[in-house]
Length: 54
Figure 1: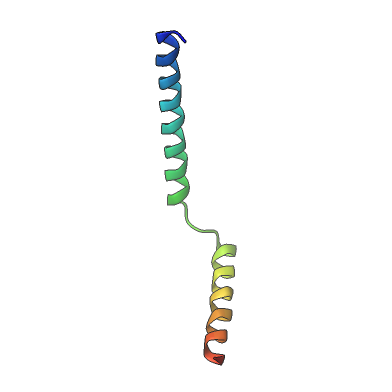
Figure 2: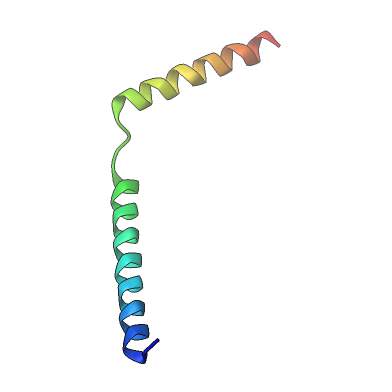
């Protein structure tokens, strides 16, 4: 492999890495959709009911 190929490969990997970090960061900052909040609430209620029955 030529040194130029190594450098190009490193630059490509760095770009991919930066883009993946940016996408992940954007997703983490998004608010959870209402349907997921509702589902989590229902699951928590079920878990609480099971805990009270013990």
